[in-house]
Length: 370
Image 1 (cartoon, rainbow, N blue to C red):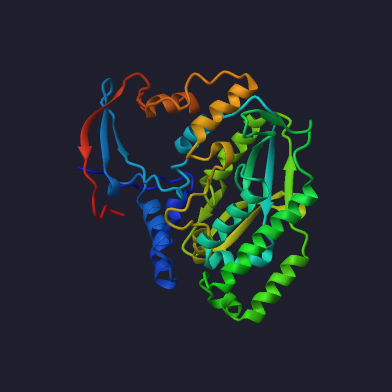
Image 2: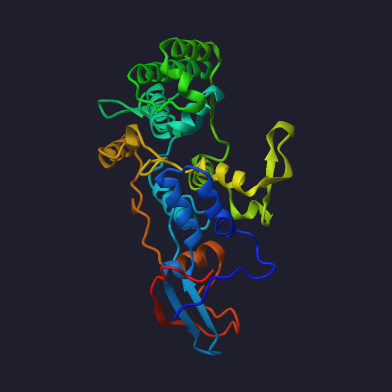
């Protein structure tokens, strides 16, 4: 017993609609890796009869509503809100009563093609180079405590309003990354195809490294005016967002997709772009991360192996009390939506008086109706 998920006339455009309309043709025309196939498959099945769900009925007016399960894929724009809120709650519990600094490490554009063909290897190198540059603090897009815990258990404070000299930081980051990149090229750790095939030759490798060494690499470091909570909110949106949100989509048809974007070359002005549907999906799949790749990593005090003991030592050195709970409280879906959106998902959307009750459990449908 299941009703097909159809897009109502005038409904907002969603990425899932575009994947359902153009996904099959795109897969047939492009060679995708397994994780890209799985991401597209999950998005097109998200909150449809394919994943099963529940049939709920209002106990006042009798109205019925089909509620289907979500895919929980990290590339699905509809499945990141709860994950982001849980992550934020955990990170807030780890904050120390010290100044924090927001750092961003950026690689030159010359490495884009290599990253597209070897995301797991290159991203891991980026994390490692950034962490070594910071002497084992946080990660690439980093929130860094303004101080350090000494071996004797004392807290060493950073100079007021200052963490590291940015120019020196950029030089160290460049050196750390290029050393790792040179070793990876020499040891043939990359898959070199298409635009990067020439890098199989030692001469081309030396030329690339020399060109990259001449460039001034960019590292951003600033103490946030509103404190570390402001940066956590930003990072929560940054780390849990997908390649494109449903809010940016305008329309699509049999050939193209229209969406909003910010033109960074012209003052971040909001503009509209139209792309061929296959090109739109090609660009989306470029952002699909390797399977099992951890985009959020912790170093130093927050390294998972010793985090609890080191945080306790840091708080003791600072004379700070431990938070009441170091873990985010268990929160039901009903309570979550009430807190985030002031939405009672149990209230009947028809009469606004009754409560929706589960009257049937819907098994997943292998081939739900279109």
